[in-house]
Image 1 (cartoon, rainbow, N blue to C red):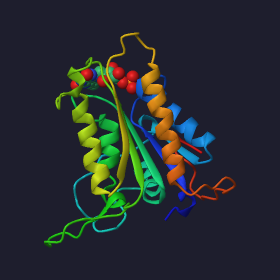
Image 2: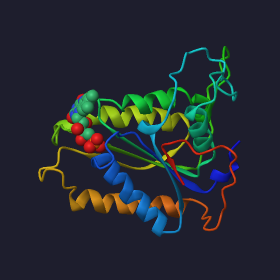
Image 3: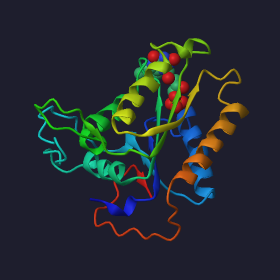
Image 4: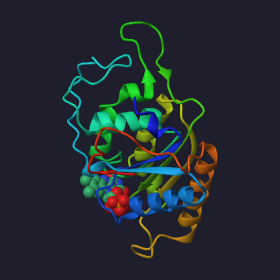
Length: 222
Ligand SMILES: Cc1cc2nc3c(=O)[nH]c(=O)nc-3n(C[C@H](O)[C@H](O)[C@H](O)COP(=O)(O)O)c2cc1C
């Protein structure tokens, strides 16, 4: 178990566009959380190497995925031990991006304790932790509010985070900006407020040293 990540605000960037809307909003949240004293871990999901889940269910409950160790295992450990989680995704087909979905599929036990073939409900593992969800779409307001558009992306990420017991502190759903690529003040202000709120919810570890023997994956920034 990667205990070094305790106290961190973990940001999962599900957009391949590093200067796109999702990444830019996530950066605002991360910078604000960092300025408020939180330790931030940033993962560019698109830069990871994660094999898709093969559906064997051998990971349940609480076991390691049987696939050869890859970034899916590494990020799963960061998820298990983070103190707050921010998930950003562009809206693709009214859903989260495929790379993010693959990462979540590989990490069911990082979110919930689920015993197969019993009538017991899965038990969430992150009760009491805060999370935030960010998405961007080409659909302008109010069409982005349709469940077939970015509301669908938010709902899909919520399904995962709710299963984990996270308390969703806020969602940001950015429609096609009228001003082209410029992110409006409204969204920037909301992002900063979320960053401060998440920072306030975690234990602050200003001087925590990381001694993970595992090399950070390509998309993971510490
Ligand atoms: C494969 C793909 C599917 C998309 N599907 C949708 C969609 O269902 N609804 C929508 O409004 N925009 C859709 N878009 C547009 C993106 O959501 C939009 O460009 C968004 O701003 C990208 O976010 P980013 O700037 O964070 O990368 C799609 C884009 C791609 C590449």
